[in-house]
Amino acid sequence: MKGTRPPAIPFIFVTIVLDVLAFGIIIPVLPRLIQQFMGGDTARAAGIIGIFGTMYAAMQFVCSPILGVLSDRFGRRPVILTALFGLGFDYILMALAPTVAWLFLGRVLSGITGASYTTAGAYIADVTPPKDRAAGYGLIGAAWGLGFVLGPALGGFLGDFDPRLPFWVAAALTLLNATYGFFILPESLPPERRKAPEWRRANPLGSLRLLRSHHGLLGLAGVYLLYFVAHQVMPAVFVLYTGYRYQWAGRTVGLALAAAGICGIVVQGFLVKRAVARFGERRTMLAGLCFGVLGSAIYGLAPTGGLFALGILAGAGAGLFTPSLMGLMTSAVEPSAQGQLQGATGSLQGLTGLIGPGLFSLTFASFIGASAPFHLPGAPFLLSGLLTLTALVLGWVVTGRVARR
Image (tube, rainbow, N blue to C red; front, top):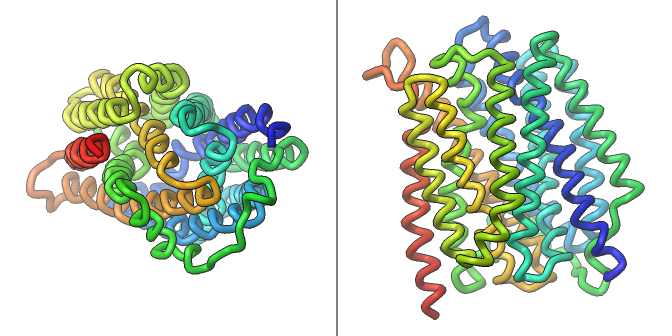
């Protein structure tokens, strides 16, 4: 085991950077491609994007616990690599898609293969002691940030030439990443720590039973659920909202997402470890939720694109939330159940995707359409802020009870 630890974190970092880079490339172009298929109708496109997001999340909800259980039995390496190769070929499918129906099929397959993030989370738990896990998950967040610095900016640039080109580049990067991993990635879970699959844990409801079996874990899962429902506002409406309200083109959207990625790198790559060391995981988590509320309020109320950009700075502080929460949650379960825990949290995130895209895209369409009770394009972000505020209150109560025990 000691021999696998030194290269593990750097490889997972590189893997997630390349994976998110590939994912980020298509963000500025997928909604616009759907909009083209819908004849340029923004409100109709928002509804279709909501359906896409819901189905993607449904696949993650179902498949995350399956991958988690399989990784507990067979190891993290084969699950991660199989998912990466599948995702690369899926991008090729979407690059060739002649209709919305083919794009929809591509998103279904992306939801299945994209559940590999849960296994990467279990990998981090395997190779880091409990006291260092928040910092480890902070590096995962920084990898996401770096991927989003490069991905959306590159996708916006490439999409101005051809909306299909970003999908081809995403496919190439993902398959390159998978090939690199095939030769480099060491296994993190030794045979003596693996356990035979219990398939009742591999269904979403079965995997969620773990959250009730450890003290305080269910309450933390509730905080996780609320926050990530709120966070679904970004993929659901960000591109259409900024285009509708601020007339941002694909390149501007890409640069804005790149700026958000840079801020995420700073927060999760450099500040999380220091904040947890000084204030502890509980206070760091609550501070992240406070920044999330502030960022959502600015996004929803900003009358100009310049003021909207301030929300990126404020919202970056929300990057303190996930690493500190995951540090609390992974410390509550035994090593042999880390894959199951990541599968359960992956199912939760899939559940948020079942709720969030439809909720926020419908809210957006309802407040910009001809039959809107009043014109309020920022309504989805204000709703997101309210959900994050609820998560903050619940997190304060739940972690306060755990701390007093």
